Length: 601
Image (cartoon, rainbow, N blue to C red; front, side, top):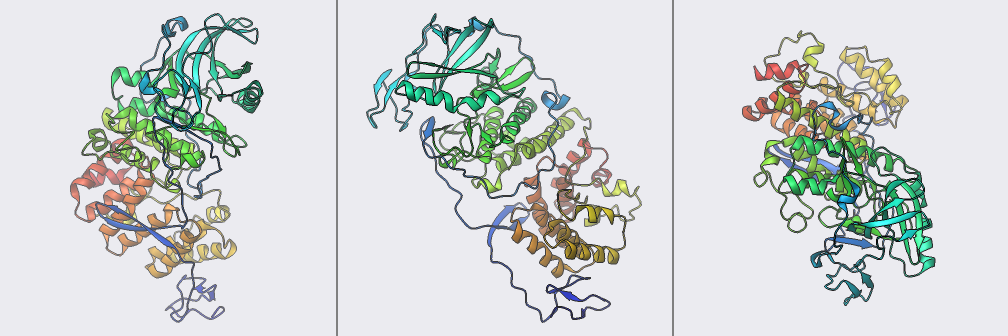
């Protein structure tokens, strides 16, 4: 079959690899065998979209009690590619300069000491089996592990001839947290217990195991100064942060304003990105409102006791019910870390009753939580961040922060009636504006008004495609992108560009063949769904197109292009009210989107 002349009318190509090297269409008598796949279906108000997935378990181990520790550790990494995140967000200031958040005055360290340190009975759990414990110390009646909820350090105790204990600050998952004075450097410090060792050798091993934390240096992560041992206990010596935990702020004020909560979470994602970029990556494990603080006009991770290397072959994993991912007990991962970030944001912005029980791994519907109904993009963000399958969530902290920044811009723009545009790393600009309004059919919603995809500069064919980007002739584009697929047979970008060109010239079956090739290589490449939506739109199927654009909106809730595409398809499908809402969001957030303004008009 290869080498034969293409039989399509007017085509001069030849068959290579089962398809024409010019028009991309498979010969009528040709047979192509492609890998089998399983299919995942996503339903929206416009219908159901079939998206490919891979076979194999992802792990759904749950947790019990208010917190848990597990001795099972594995790499447990998501199998999904992280190609979709091409650049990090700017995190130079809290809230990206879009909003003002309440600034906390510095607190007197002595004022935060507990007068009578005690752990309430409803917070006493066995660190081994999670069984409820009634007494302050003794042996767990279920598993027999010894426990002690009374402070082991007293005011006046001195550790390592340097750190004088002043009192207790709180009780955490690893034991009591103490305020101390560094007698050598004249500064306040915090002593945080390490794993509960039963002998001095075990304590020494625990101290040595955590030495890597001393190398962690980031503006939004509490500084680790030292590690000390006292008998059978080991302690991390950390920077004292004179602020309030987000748990305390949330308790005092109730659900936080959405923009304020987003600002805090967006900023702290920089710390997660830093930890995840280490070699090997570090995972925080137990993120929740208790574990990051507002200090002055910035936020900071304050508890490094549960941080682990992602490839650590043994040890305990710490997590909290209601925040930890379903698979967290099988081993901490970057993706399970990001799950805790999304859950924390959900708890900060809504009256989340039942988040540790009925909604332990789910979110309430918008009908139950008005904040979700009011802020659709935020709701979609939280849904993606807490999906059951790790492969379907955000894969990097930078990707998560990029989308959250877009949502913050959208909400602030809508509420202030003032645009806050920014350039997307994934999508091009408004087509109508780039054409100077020369499109003669601007009064009708159509696929020609949908912004294009930016070239993935990490793709092997990127430079070839960019070097030939000036051509606008459809037939010439077909030839260029066909050459790209031949020159770079493993390039997803080349196949996607060829598929788009085939769609624009009405060769839908050939385009689908190319899209399927990309999907086989990467089942989570959302660009395949995007181009299928455009194909449906061009074939006069706006409702099917809307279902596909709706899926991309959920994948990238902070981007404007999917909202615009969905608005165009929704209008064409007769969903005028929903289209109007989307046009309004896009046009208010970025006045450069002329298409959205025309849509409203």
